[in-house]
Length: 211
Image 1 (cartoon, helix red, strand yellow):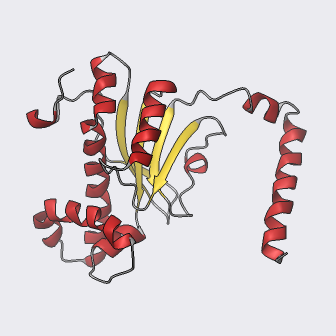
Image 2 (cartoon, rainbow, N blue to C red):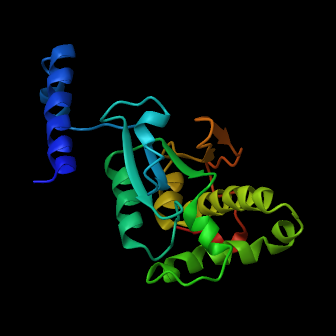
């Protein structure tokens, strides 16, 4: 057994002991079920832990993560998580959280082939195409990179609002608000991009579903 593998097993045991010292019923209570108010759609990047960023405890955040926090309309994994969160858990908020310095966004700005992930990154490139005039006008590469991270989050919030799952919830009068954030790796702070939806009225008519 490698030293690293043994260490993470030992860390788990120590973590359990620490939690039980604070609350002997900690795991018993957790096992009774979950009732989180929030679904977090974030990046798979190891530096962006959803619970820690917002100071949430286990059981308080339902989480879906993928490369560059994408909301792809044909991604059954994401849609299944969204459907369960909205229709079973009755969550009230969905946050799409990107982060500055995102490797997926950076890859989408270039042409280097990485492998099968190229097919995923194509979705990110589509976002660049939609905003190419604004992005290409930014001469500083770092500033352009940061703005691309932001507009990608904004587009993913729009794509969430376009889903039949979200629109059906709104049509049924369910309280549900979508938000777009960007996390700063070098500061720890999140930036609210002020893209907040609680109905489909801000979508183009072609996306507004009738039930």
